[in-house]
Amino acid sequence: MTKLTLVSRRYCHLCTEMAAALETLAADFDVAIEIVDVDADAALEALYDELVPVLLHDGHELCHYFLDASKVRDYLSEIR
Image (cartoon, rainbow, N blue to C red; front, side, top):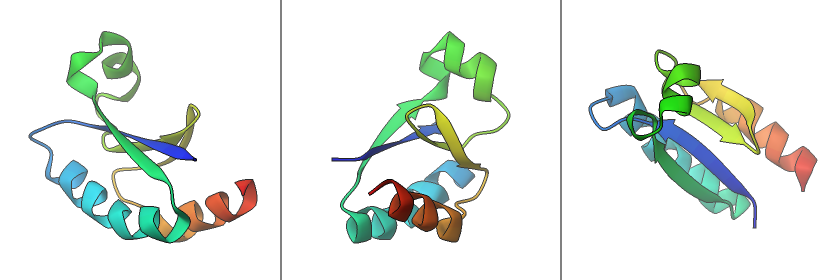
């Protein structure tokens, strides 16, 4: 199963919005979403602190701040 990683933080409204928007996309493509707290990992914080939320697949950044649904859908279609 394909897994997307959402780099997020608890007090971030954009993170909450992206997580909610990902639910439909994840169901449509049968992908798992792993949510990782950027503040719990110094290396992730150094990379993504001001960019969260960040959506990744195998370390490849798909989008940040807002879900680019069409880009992510195209990407998931390509890797299937």
